[in-house]
Amino acid sequence: MHFDAHSDTSDTYFGGEKYTHGTPFRRAIEEGLVDPKRMIQIGIRGSMYERDEKDWAESVGIRIVHIEEYFELGPKAVIAEARRIVGDGPTYVSFDVDGLDPVYAPGTGTPEIGGYSTAEAQQMLRGLAGLDLVGGDVVEVAPPFDPSGNTALVGATMMFEILCALAPAVHRRKQQTPAKRSAAVDAK
Image: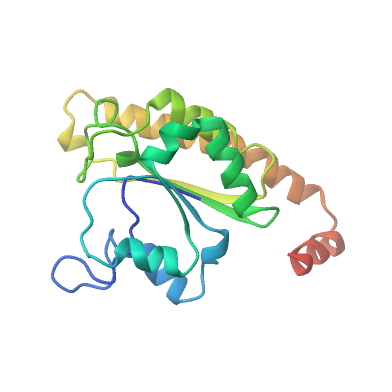
């Protein structure tokens, strides 16, 4: 599950580089690390680095919720769709602060106006409770770009929200006996 303003599915970035902050999901899919049919991107908007970025993502099965659709549906419906897409399988959450409107998190290298609010982001992240979460990250916090320190606070708060949803999933896995854990993994 990917919250971001950008799809991060470019083939290359920064003059032909294959491994950059604009290419990780393309590489992860190509390398078999991510199932694109269980992937959803929420809040996509703004400029694209490569023409085929969006087309490639959709062609491999990534569900993209553009910001216009997000605002039409609202956070609850978007998270319901996200839960449908990821299903019961292991789920990783990546939260890029530029998914937020820059009034809430200006300290990022690639800000895009017109994003969701911090309150809406918290609502979405809290809606992950009960999923089989296996990890998460908050990326693109750049404190030098925000002398107020607000972006760092926002980043730490979003990570806290992810951890609050992750902790019960870790606890559930630890409660399983090794045989049940193995059977659950095999079933997925």
